[in-house]
Image (cartoon, rainbow, N blue to C red; front, side, top):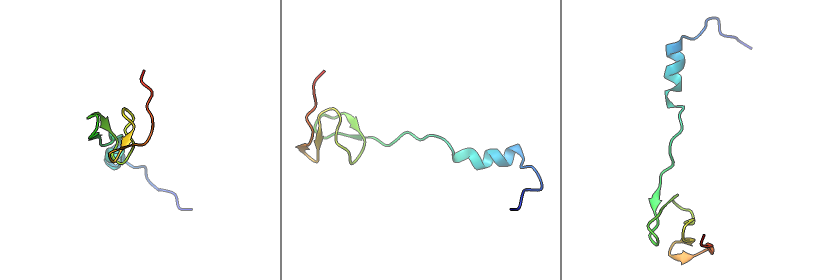
Length: 60
């Protein structure tokens, strides 16, 4: 296996890692209860998906 002959500089390493950060997932608004939810998922607040109730949500 070939090994690197020279050490990579801090700038080169940092330039490569500029995009290695956490990104907050995109949120959409639930059309039923207007709470933020992940797109293409059942709303965790009201339990609806595409206008129909999919799961029953227990009130706290």
